Amino acid sequence: MKKSLHYVVLAFLLSGSLVACKNNAPKETKLIPKDAIAVVSLNAYSLKDKLQSDGISIDTILSKIFEKDTSSKKDRKIIDDLRANAGINWKEKIHFFVVRKKAADNSDVTIMNVLASISDKDKLASFIKSSDYSSNKNIQEEKAFNYIDNKENSLLAWDKEHVLAMFYTQNVKPYYDSIQMKFIVPSKGNSSKEMIAEANRLFTQKEEASIMSVKGFGEMFKTNAEGYLFSSSNNLLGNLTGMPLELPKLEELTKDNYTTATLAFEEGKIVVKSSTYTNPFLGSILSKYAGPTVNLSLLENYPSKNINAIMMASFNPAIFGGVLQQLEVEGIVNEFLKKSGISSGDLYGAVKGDIAVIVSDIGIGATEPQQRIDELFLSKQKQIGKMIMNIPIGNKDNFKKLMDKAVEMGTIQKKGNEYKGADLLRTMGLFLVANDQNLILASDSITYAQYIASTNKSVINKEALDYFKGKSTVIYIDVANTVNGFIKDSTDGYHQSMITAKNTVKDILGSSENYSGGSIKAIFEVRMQNEKQNSLVTLMSLFTNIAVDARLQAKREKEMEEKLFPTGVPAVIRAN
Image 1 (cartoon, one colour):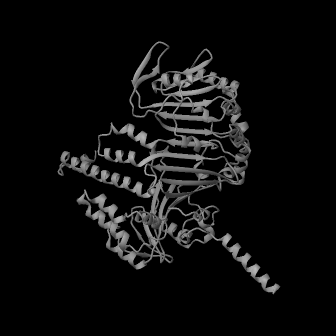
Image 2 (cartoon, one colour):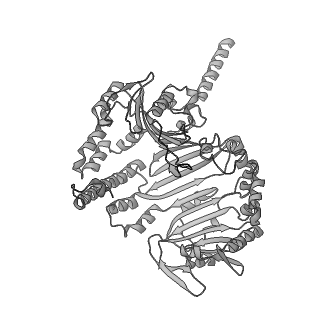
Image 3 (tube, one colour):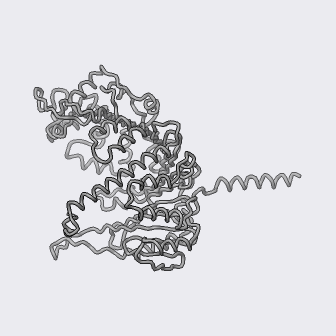
């Protein structure tokens, strides 16, 4: 009996370990390489199901888009055939991913890919042959897949289970030929050959070479969602090659950092949750220099009841010194700055580590002082809106040293104990004042004066304020109010779409937390006016109206062009 019990317990533990080690990544992602810099996965079936639960079908949406444009029957037929006759399994996820690499001539190559599952290989082949996808209808065969080469930097490849659309872009780098005394643009390589080689790699790679083997990628699929995002920092180092200053530990800092995110359409809001996972080297820096949370007192006295947007962040300024030390370049940077009489410590020590940007009254169009030429003369002009950016000061001596250097350069002016913007900022319509407490950049002198007076109390969404507490970075955008500010000046074909947008989207909230437990957590919410309806249904109505307006606007522009440029006029003249 004891022996039987021993086997039962052993079997239970073994099954538990298998479940724990199970890779939640969709099986088709075996075709996505580990070196992909970004992957977006969409659950098309879940999206369709949420629409249908509210009585909306794809056919209804398409009919509305095309109902006012009967000239595009061909476009509608292509979409219908793709949905019904291409052999694609729409119940499985669709993946978009990007790969970057170096060509033989060291130029940059970007390959964008779309990966889907298929239910009928023969049906897909018939669809390709009968459609206008390519002028070349000859299906080629490789050992692991079939393909059609479009000869236009695109390739369509498939096997029994998957179909892959590939789009190839090569950015060649011109160079100066000192003998011919002119710039030479190198000819691009054989993209067809490169795409076939890339397809061979993807269709034959082992799981350990695929994105499935990357920690964090499979984990995000444990969450039920309509969309998933994965991005990697591993390609960042390649983009930084050629820097004048070689950083000894840059690769150690940038490699194996990943961000995952899920997109869910909930009742009344769209929710995006993300996690950024760091390597031990970067993680140790973030842990050592963990920052504070946002300083909400910077918002309290903003002089407006019509706030459009808020962006705030708090950080430990010493993290910049920590990064320089870990990269072993602090001495080099200080030597470089030595001639200017400042050090890297002066730079990051000058600020406290808080920043707040508040924007208001967009579209109101009030005429207020914008530029202060001197203490007596004010130049007036119509404002788009009002703005305050407040950066509290850290070490006062460090800050004074930096500002005095800016005065020497003519960027700012010093008046008494304050620093004010010089001609450059004035011509940009910005008003700057800095002292040993704050550096404030304002849209105009009146907004600055009212903010500093602290006699006003800002009117901010209470939900947003509660949402901000305990976060390291936050963002708030009052979408409805902002769109409403522009509606009266909108007279083009998108006026109705703007009205629909105002009545559809309420606001946007976003925040991130400090580094903890090996990752940085963030959340982003788009809140709808209708809190009881699924956000996908609400949003689809908006997108449909925009699509209708876009098609009608494009049709009107085409008709206008045909009136202005008869068909007898050469195409080159019409194009210019």
